[in-house]
Image (cartoon, rainbow, N blue to C red; front, side, top):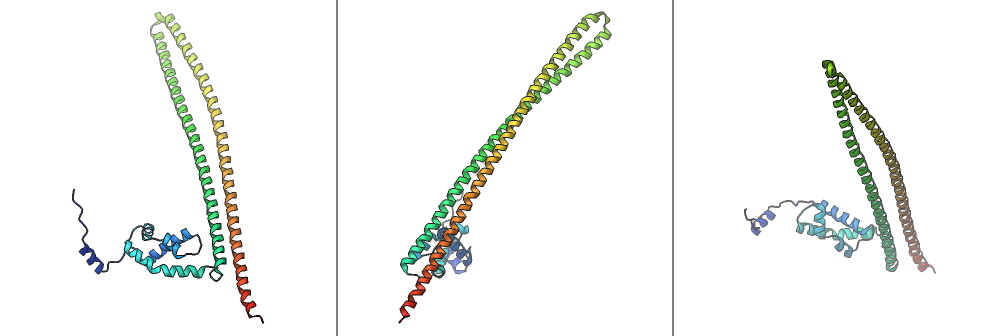
Length: 282
């Protein structure tokens, strides 16, 4: 086994001087940074502390699937101020007093976290319902496989009986030929033939009774499987309707929170607009 070649600093320096392009473009790195912030901030204002907590060169490289950590880190530092400025410009409470702005940001953050928690709860319950449905489906599949196995065994037994009947038919034919060939043994052969016919009739009757019993059992199992399938479908339908109701409740809560935030923002804007007017009055 060959030993790995140790890294050569001079070779790396020459490659950097040759101006080799990076694995990822600046736009791709910026897009990854924005995605990281969008997932972590959930629409809230991006502060320097939040930016440094959510964005790192390793996380960006993992999202991109590779790249040079040094180059990604330089790109992050070069666009940090621009992204913070854009977030501050989009902040609806940037012009309000610090106390009001802090309260509104905290209220919005709490509402977003509560909505995320409720959504996670709904997803967990939905996943649990899906797992239960899958378990019931597996049980039904196992029952179906068992019934198919039993039907296969019964079919094999039926084939064996048919084979035995065929053998008896061959015996009867052979005895009939012997009766024609040996008239002297006619009475003995007729007695054997009668015994063989009686045995065949008994076997045929027993086979008919057994096959009837199997068919009755199969019909009962089939009806039971249909009832369990209907119950399974009803359970899935109820679980889906419950999930839809919970999702609708989450959407209503999110809409109510958004309207409450807009109402507070409008009230704060009206209050900030009325204060300068009072100061200019004689």
